[in-house]
Image (cartoon, rainbow, N blue to C red; front, top):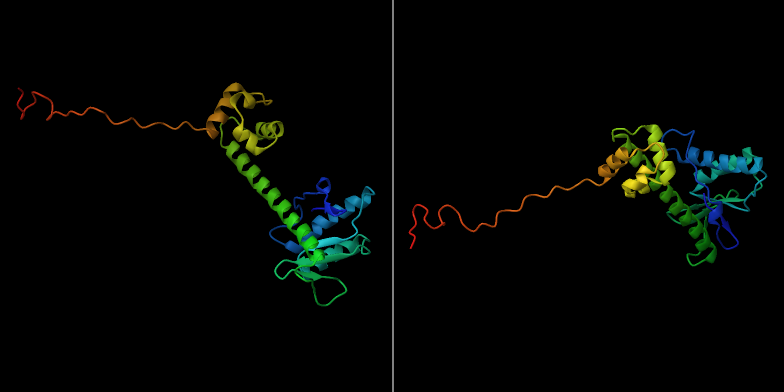
Length: 217
């Protein structure tokens, strides 16, 4: 979830959410969970509420968001949906979507916010996939259990840092012994064995002087 304020993106207020209550791919239910958690927390902590809620989607997504706002007593906050395919703006009180001029600054602003939300979400999902991959890889290394895996990720900060760290950096992580640090490093930096080079000897049994079948002078 991203925030736009005073003509620009306010990245300090961005929020990431891992879906907890929805099984499988359910866009409407996932959106409802995220909005409920976001605004319920804002109400609980007397946080700042938005002047407008922009939903990424059409009529269905907007209706899901409107129900959450109504359930929380926040139905006075305006909400609109921006459908990507035709860049149509859906509003609660209008049966048909609003089609803005493609050159409209208002449309460009909505698109910029929507596209930033896409970028932010995609970056987060890639990070989660990378983290899950590194966790599964670490689990295959002998001597690493959940406790050491957690210590590695917490101390080094990211899955990428675990892969890129030196033996000394790995050994500085709590619970990681020098021997285990070397094992982890070797796992991510396997030694490539070089094939032996062919012999440069230009002679063989038949071409050497004095061999059978040839004359030596």
